Image 1 (cartoon, rainbow, N blue to C red):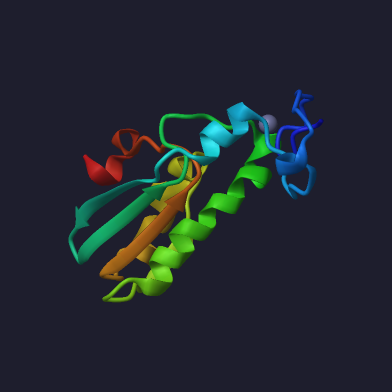
Image 2: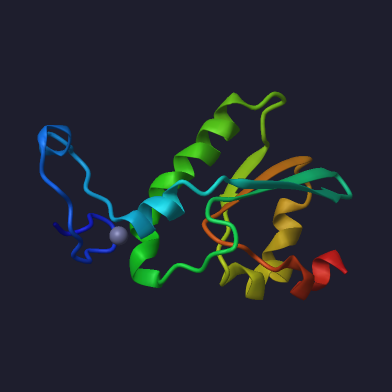
Length: 130
Ligand SMILES: [Zn+2]
């Protein structure tokens, strides 16, 4: 059987419980999918910036990011059901930290901000939070 996420081959015993299974995901991909989402709040001048990391403590290869993006649904449900509502919801990936200083002024006026990221982002390298 090939994992539907990483495409690697793995062995699965075919029996009545697996025969009608729609998704075949290997144990290592399932372990990543089962990681609890990390939520943190960063105070900013105008309010708070909430940050949700879908796969904390991991790195994902670029070719797998699309497959693992399915977990963004947790952040989107959080955004839709939060009270008070978020002013803005943005996807934030490692590469954005390089340009964060340039575009953050456009986000700063909002008082309730949600950033969604697949993996950890090190804000300590950004001068915005020093
Ligand atoms: Zn896999």
